[in-house]
Amino acid sequence: MPELPEVETFARILRTGSEEQPGIIGLSVESSVVLWSKTLAQPAADDFARLVIGQSVDAINRRGKFLIIQLDRHALLIHLRMSGDLQMVPPGNDVPRHTRLLLKFTNGWILAFNDPRKFGRVWCVLDPLTILSDLGREPLDSQLTPEIFHQMLHQRKRQLKPLLLDQKFLSGVGNIYSDEALHLAGLHPLRNAISISSDESRNLLTALQNVLTEGIARNGSSIDWVYRGGDFQNNFRVYGRTGKPCPVCGTPITHLMVGQRSTHICSACQKMEES
DNA sequence: CACGAGACCTGTTCGC
DNA sequence: TGCGAACAGGTCTCGT
Image 1 (cartoon, rainbow, N blue to C red):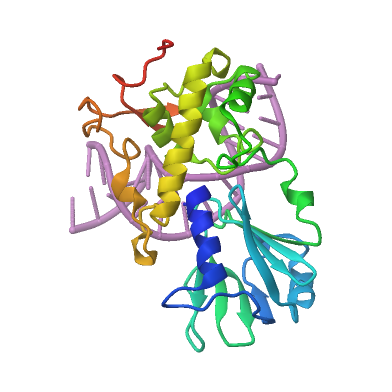
Image 2: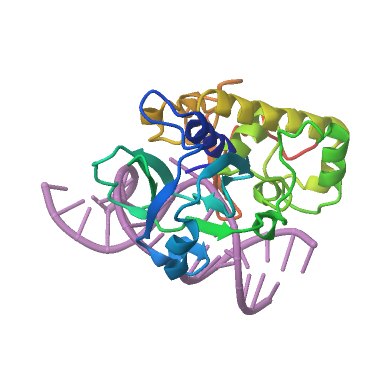
């Protein structure tokens, strides 16, 4: 479900709250429960409650697709993978059906990690870098210049789309936003990264930044995201639009598999040859 | 190093 | 209508 814009949206809501829920900065953990032990990647589930109880939330950050909840001593790193969701449950209410881990704060609110497919993971560590150090650069980092990005691409002899999805190469881009960015840049997902010209890489970086920024501005996408205000899914150019007209030229959108991932392109706008 | 296949999981949609 | 197959926003590991 979540890529960079969705995780960023979670971070903002948890940080500042919304009309429906309080922010969690400053709240103190009263208790916690791990309902699916594999959700907790580190440490062992038995040790988790003892570690976090009594700590309060100092800050909320994001790195790639990781949400980082900084406590007094430890940091909670949360990766939602395919179906993870974070919800604030008001005092006295039941947690959602597929809650795998929860934190109850002293004000009675519960932060529930809901994850039907059980792919999501939570780490509780003293030093976040032990988990995050392999991540590639942030695509929205202003330090990431077109020149640097071109060099990064030119060093790799890989298909463009799987490279964009590689979190060691670039952090935060997932299946939806890579399809959207490649279409916006007019690049075929199977183009070899080493063949991408300086102009093309500049266009791709701009396209990535544009689709991610728009995703954040629209509070994320993701199909069932409407209930928390996200509506980017209504603005997809190609993702999930197989057979529908390309917004640029009207050619029906084509579906193909690239590296085992569902991929959507306009065969007229995105050619294999260098433009 | 690059790539494909399989694994991890459950819920929803698709096709006959 | 019913039922099994296919598919889903992500990542890891293994074999070639």
